Image (tube, rainbow over all chains, first blue to last red; front, side, top):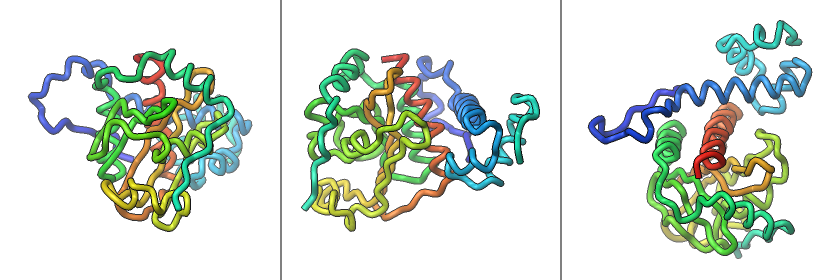
Length: 78
Length: 170
């Protein structure tokens, strides 16, 4: 998923959203969701992928991208 | 014959929780508008909403696309979503209608037979911090559609962001 986003009108005032980077928020939320799901399944990647409803390959790709195995102390069961 | 969604047994408490947020009938929030606009582009749909279900109406805090800001609750798709979803687990909070014309709950719904001619609908149900269903972040398309697991993962992610904003900003 691409998290890039550009406003239609770059001159539009955006004081209210200047502190809200949606791309960062998406990454933070994805990490939280993956970590919490893996923790519920005691690090079992297959079961976490089943709960999320994605393929194991997709989840492993995200785990690698966000270094989630390191966050969980290398406790994942692949 | 289209069917209105049943009313949850805890609806009075749910509505009280929604009212306590002070979010209804307030001006647009720039961050939620960013979320709905981003989602519409990301999922390639013409309409994306952050909708809240009040006692007798659906009221939209943010709209991208052509749909009324407020509609009666009995014709609202999101009312079905908040009735059907009973889990607090993020990935169980999805309600999907792949083809409204073939779904007896919606086939005669005026939102299907008339503008905006809804064909597919998917929602992530937004909850209060106490787990009460408040409304949805939903995607509406005018063609039938089945979302993939990866798309649903993305919708849940963005939905959680919308939920945080609703719970912390309103």
